[in-house]
Image (cartoon, rainbow, N blue to C red; front, side, top):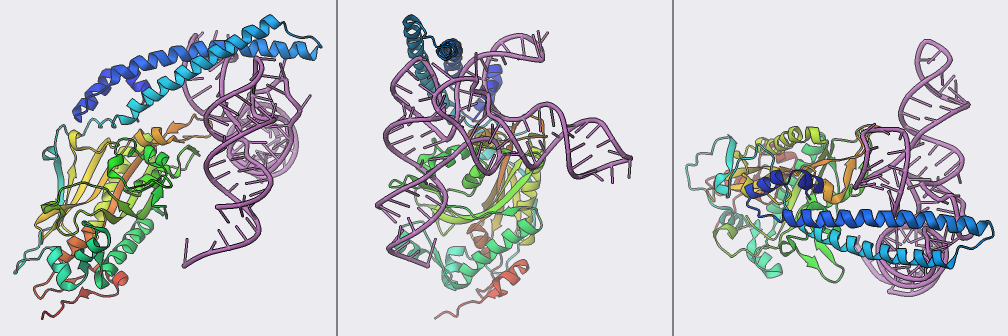
Length: 428
RNA sequence: GGAGAGAUGGCUGAGCGGACGAAAGCGCCGGUCUCGAAAACCGGUAUACGGGUGACUGUAUCGUGGGUUCGAAUCCCACUCUCUCCGCCA
């Protein structure tokens, strides 16, 4: 949510920023409603002040054994009615303002490249060499099937298209990756591991920015009005909802692995082949609550923590900075990490690292106290995948495959998998 | 799912419908004392929005939303959450 105060003081700045991300705005409506709201508010305050004063007087008389005049009582009853009318007015105005504010995306930071589509994203750097194969590397859907570790047909049997199952070494590989990544982030990057619910209330999704605008991308349980999380970012954001964090508690870094549920109505096609784009997947998510002064620096650290996962797995990757037009709703600045997949011959997005500045903090009322006497301030929130499964599994299978159909396991995972290769299955 | 109890400030915990933003204690911050610390003592310690250069001041907030009343933390209704017992269960 954007600051109403900022909209009030510098509407042009806000308008330009929103336009840069392709967002038409209804700022003048907000400003008009806000003027009305402030008018009604101060009028109500004055009436209430008057009523409080008279009521106190009535009480004083009463304790002195006297009664207030019927005239005064009648007048106060009227004031009460006016107050409730104004309150109703304020409530309605606030709701309208809220609705508009809730639908406006975050403002891009000044250094975000201008652009309208993903074509305008900027490659920041590239790491690692594409492996040279002396055979034609298979895409994971062939490889996985051949090795008997990925079964897409059975996933569809259980749950429909774009669900999958993994068996044996494939399932183990994913579990090993999760454990290893969590250990890496907690032991070397300073994150605290959290275990979270995968079902959340509407309020949690509003705090994170997914609702009300993106309801059609989410799975919803009607019966109990609970929603399946699209990412751990949602529950983590709400961990400190409506809180004022004490001095010294920032930066506060969390890492969590949760299943992620994404209700996408994408037509079947090249992008949906295999398990690149599925409706349920696991993701290790890093999240930080930081001071506003440090958020840009912390974003670079967060990004490096995610890149570190790729480097240690020896997966070639590149980092993109998203242009204004490609930013997510709540993001002010985003880097994507893409790993090279030798089999599909394409870059796969495995991480998206963003700063949401104070956008989520304002929605979820997350503040901190800089020092013992200071007034509370909104925190800045950052999030980034570290990393998303099963795409890392795909990249490992495709990049580490051998001519005989076996797959080597990256060294750092050996203690976690308990095996160093996934052996080829003899054909026939 | 059935029966009961409860929800007050960072925490514990008072609060006959009228000066209650809320006693007291703890914690925290500042000060006195000390070479320093502890103890002791003194003072200060919620949030949001508005007005004023400022001291200060108005309004709202006692789980949430309604209602009664000139006036609600206090009375009434609904909801939510927590706890205890029973049932079910990984």
